[in-house]
Amino acid sequence: MGLIIQVAVLACLAATVGLDSPGWIAGLAFGAVTCAALDVGLGRTGQAALGPADWVTLTRAMLAGGVAALTADSFVRDVPATVYVGVTVVALALDWVDGQVARRTGTASELGARFDMEVDAALLLVLSVYTARSFGVWVLAIGLMRYAYVAAMWPLPWMRGTLPPRYWRKVVAATQGVVLVVAASGVLPRWLTLAGLLGAVVLLVESFGRDVLWLKGGAPS
Image 1 (cartoon, one colour):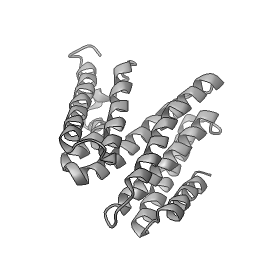
Image 2 (image 1 turned 180 degrees about the vertical axis):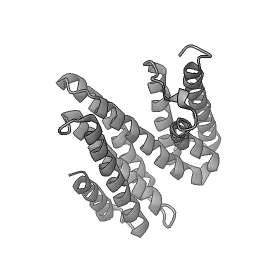
Image 3 (image 1 turned 135 degrees about the vertical axis):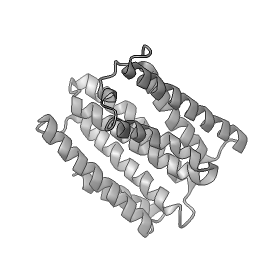
Image 4 (image 1 turned 180 degrees about the horizontal axis):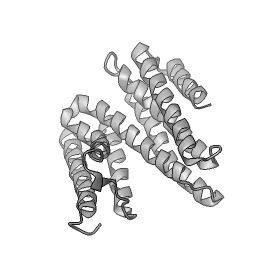
């Protein structure tokens, strides 16, 4: 079903603003990897099927696949900023919706929380790739930091510990999305957008740094 949703999203983009080969390849690859990872997650957690909130998250993931398709196309042609920002804003808004659905239906799950987090990370990575074309490769730090953190768990076993809940993480994550969308829209002066991106990186370093220190035992979270 996920791939069907992804194809539908890509078909809508193709019909409205057009979609070249890079976009189709990136979008379909994004959808295929997402669905494969979700199947693995279902198997590992023993969850029989997706819950209501998981379906919202899956839809958000496929919209992120549409953003990935437009990002890939932006390397070979001009992509309308209004469409790019519009699809991204809907994907970001659904992040709030799936949380509400999970709480109101009592269907929150370990798989749902992890799926939601990974979709957030993937969307930020795609947005940072798009934004880096205009502001420099350093912007990729926003999208890659989460994956660098995960990669560090392999050589550093102490980083695999469970972190306590911290609302500030959610604030920082939401800030990254907002700043990247504003940067993609081009509505602000370049210097102001640049300042926002620099601030977003600083917040991200602070948030991840605090978690690393807590896992290492050097500071409270």
